[in-house]
Image 1: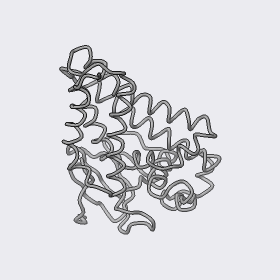
Image 2: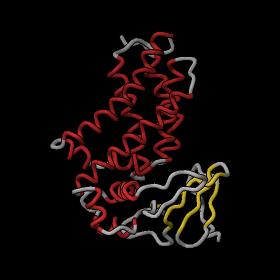
Image 3: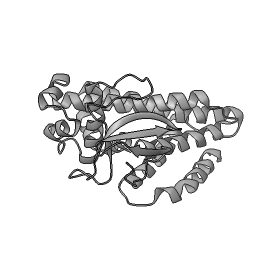
Length: 258
């Protein structure tokens, strides 16, 4: 039955078989069934879909494991509520798993958070790897603009991933936990490598002025990351700043450093 709600951004449409399972269609092909909540769970700021522990994939794809379902749901909870405010009991309720099942897969809540962070890191880097592999750029400046655009696109289409990275806990935990620190280091260094790669290429083809490539990449990345922060905290309509962001980056990158 149709419930008259909009499909998430980027999805072609949706139909509901009943009031529990959500059938998602991407380019007219069924992608998965997820648990659908008619009411927003307490503490959520907006309408969300949480992957069900009984989640099964249509079209001959393999069934997702319960562990994957727990990680998907925990990603949303940690992103929305934060680490300390996320209760394992509620995670178990949302996924239809017993608390003992959660702790069967993850010994502690901290272990679960590490699995979520690894999931976010792998998701972001996989998306960028695919995008860069399929894209062609005529100049380094064009590459920079496309990297910025794809970063913002990804932040909009995978909000929980980027909301989690805006939280304080990952960086607090990284002070004591080496695995957490390594996940963050790999993620941010790889993203910075993309920004720096565009700068180096632009300096070689003349579209970007000479400057310290790593420091310049950090400055550009900080601007882009800051725009995402404004959006997630509802401080400003980040979309209206998109063209100004690109124009500012062009001016900064094309101006010779004295």
